Length: 515
Ligand code: SF4
Image 1: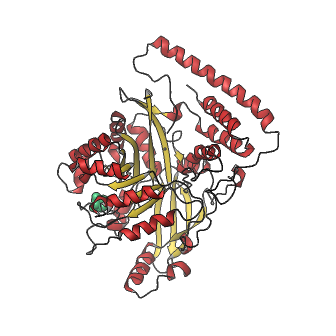
Image 2: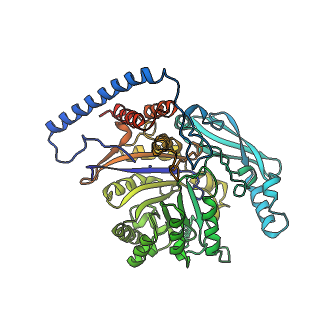
Image 3: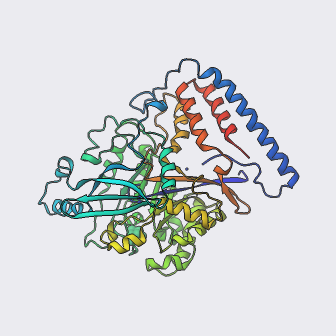
């Protein structure tokens, strides 16, 4: 393994609907003398400078020539997009956006369930839809909307307007328009129009072996068991590969607790047979902690990883879920999963005033356990499911924003993760995958995963960890990702074929590496 092993953080606003990697620093090795470290840094700087000179010389010619023809892959509805062909939603503030009245939503849902209103209403009649205003006030960003029936609603979107402004400015652009999809996308206003998302969440059951608060699913509480049949699940996975762009996505089996489903292993094996390889379970970890044989069977069926519910690094931070020794259960699950080769993503729902004070400790824990933990997914609470009806005062107190999280991490990690330097919209990860799509050529059966979600939805950062000491630093302390994204735009727009693309990619990586 490299002495500096990368791991990733991601954070999303909506955990139920929504979802990272790298380079190395050769000045981050254990046991090096100051002298050899210093000469290593000098050598890296020299390579970086030479790459910069080579890049500029190459581009002085390359950008003057007519652009090459973009690759036309089988999995896509057209030739690969050039940077100027990618569109973007309205961004910046103040702005108006489409929204929903939270009270109308509940009324319409109840009416559909009772049979009073036909389901098609959701597709054709736009029930509950209202306009919302996004605006800055006192250095923060808010959303305000007024329903003619239920009055005004206001909520906090970002505790730091500068943070949101920067993240929005780095949006990479949308993917292809979805094509051959009319049999799948029939959801009215919320139809997916671009790309295909990055995560397909497949709920296997609403049963659970826990009874938490918060619970986005309201598991065990609705008075009936809902479990789609295996045939239903197969049909969902078949539909997921039936339209374009046919990109790799994460298949996330969820619930309730998905491992309680009688056909969990069959569902994993079927997803693998269809062609997906990143097959995950969103789990509380109990089943994996209890039964190492189950872990082996899951790995054999094709399970790639877990999203492990993880509220903090002590019993104290886990006890609100009402299960004794829950932190020990998590540790056992992590050990068992790692021992069979299933990758672990720690998933932390952050509730302001409940556990936001200890999220830095989770990063430190992951870094110390880098041999077992690859990613952390921080998910600011969304008041759905069991928490749909929280009083306004509780919602205002517990609301947590991505800007707040980045600020808390900067403070709790003593400045090692800078909120205005180290975070990027999830979509900007597509800068890397857009080049990989070029390199794999026209005959590839699948496109690379490409998350083009709205920049208000999800952000990511990357850290490099010393496996031996658990020390870590932000990759973006010594890698200029903003410039790298611009360089990728030049590479994909000029489209010079595989060999020159690889050479340019190498130059772009090295010139933006600044030890
Ligand atoms: S483990 Fe997950 S699904 Fe089960 S009750 Fe807790 S939050 Fe809900």
